[in-house]
Image (tube, rainbow, N blue to C red; front, top):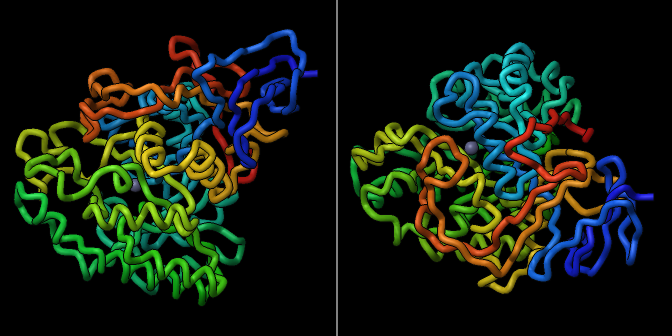
Length: 439
Ligand SMILES: [Zn+2]
């Protein structure tokens, strides 16, 4: 017998939308069906849809060490306000980076008691830390991130080709996952000191991504290591991914809201809030990414929320060379993607697959990522037809910088529920730490 029933005309499950009651007991989904009974009934409005809570596996929280960029309290508030019930924190930009268990402990200590949503952690693979990977894996990190080119911070250097292979052989031994920032160091140029977006874009061509992805796929094939391509921007790499999968390579890929929303033709010179690596590319490239989502070659869409202070983001100078490369969007991801998906004929079932089911599955997270019996009762209540204008000053992100400021988006998050209880940003945070394979 459920203690709570969520009653909605539209419930989005992995099989599609249906009218249903979702029964919850002790924070877990125990029944999905018509006319369930419970002491408490949460009735959604006629214009509201019950979505699974989003799982954002690509968030740079930056605490400790660069807490002025973002922090666990502000990031998880923003997540909750945006319908995200689970985030997985990237190993870099915080200091120390999460490249050994002692650093993971420092991070967990910093995060404790501050998290409004559930939080998991990625480990990092950097030169010389291979012996630390297994202990981190045993501590429950979801996988390991590496770079093939400069990461933007000196304490997280990239791996060379021989080191990537060594890490893949190590991870393959216990079926670990390597998540890769795939840009080839030799094919990118230092960002030129320039206010012109075209100059920045030219410094990081599609060929740099294509080459790096081809190399990663070849090494994955040789070693058997599972790999995940982070923030795919070059649509030219889609055929490589498709072919690799056909050849049995265990690869998944993500793209991000900014690559699916913006195009390079409309980035104004000096508008450094749009700077990210790999860069936002041309409109025709964006449409290629949408086709790859339709075809299932891109599995998931996650934010790559990577803010900095306004000063470091170049908001004064407009210099694309000096500005921090990273886009702030955690609170807005659902509405950004839905606005674009809806216009292309996709449904909320597709959005839930890209932003909840697939991220949880890719990371090896149990009990999350779908309105399914046995999963945590993590929900997002959205009014999918309601539009709003983004006002950056009203977001929960620590720094009031985002390229979406002033944009009209569609889909208003009316409430976010974690393990059967509505998240209240004025109350004690209830988020838990997650480990791979467990809820
Ligand atoms: Zn990132």
